[in-house]
Image (cartoon, rainbow, N blue to C red; front, top):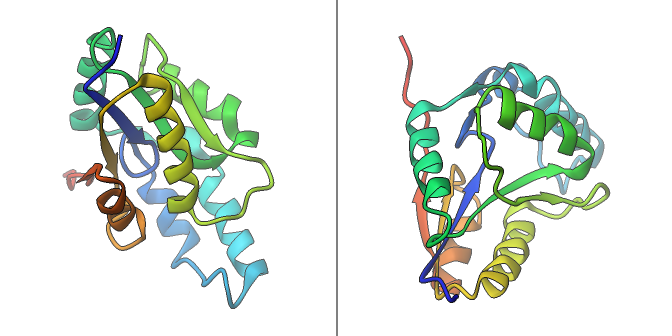
Length: 166
């Protein structure tokens, strides 16, 4: 059955509040000028993901869409690499409390391309597989290339943000 929409949710800083990990890692070094520093930064950001809190507002939307999955396919798209698959699935089940797991699409273990490029490929393939005519991408990437990639592809980009907690 052809679907009208495919929803693609990012994980980090969208459904998972990794603010503490990002603060610990500091500003992201330029991958083009200092590859080693960038690799260290990525490892720091991607370690200890089990301490992330679920973002309740985003989880509410995600759970609703998963419940309606018969009519609206949902995928999880992350630039985390596949070496973190077990940890990611564990977090999704334990913290985010996702019962029915949508497909989890991840970066290859050695793929160092920019997140937007990887997500473009993943989402495009998922759209073809779901025979979806429209894609809605929910991601925190405001300053990167994903919003413009979505515009080029004719997809809708919705900016996810984490509300400040008291």
